[in-house]
Length: 145
Image (tube, rainbow, N blue to C red; front, side, top):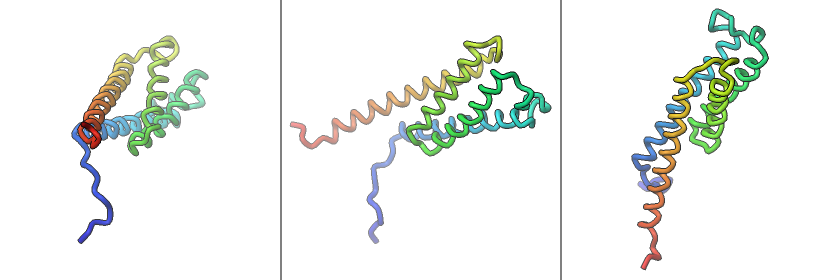
């Protein structure tokens, strides 16, 4: 019996780990999104974080993050190119909130460290994939002398 579609090459270990990494970041982004929505709708902090009770700076930041994180989660889960970009915007917003405006949003070093660590890990994965694909391209060429 002939298969309906041609079989492509199996993904390498690096590609598989990168996919797993992106999916884990997607789950984390969804968790952050649910936390922001729970706070804005009054389900957490005994209703003290409801949208109508927040100061204007918090309203702007938290509503933006409540929208960005679920969009980033979908993009990361689907492994599309815009997923990490949206995640980076959301993470940079949170880092800026806690590092540039600590008097307004407070200091949250573990959150900032986590976002920076994820970004560094993403860059390291992309470098590893670039090197791996470059090596594969050299070995596959048929016009080499």
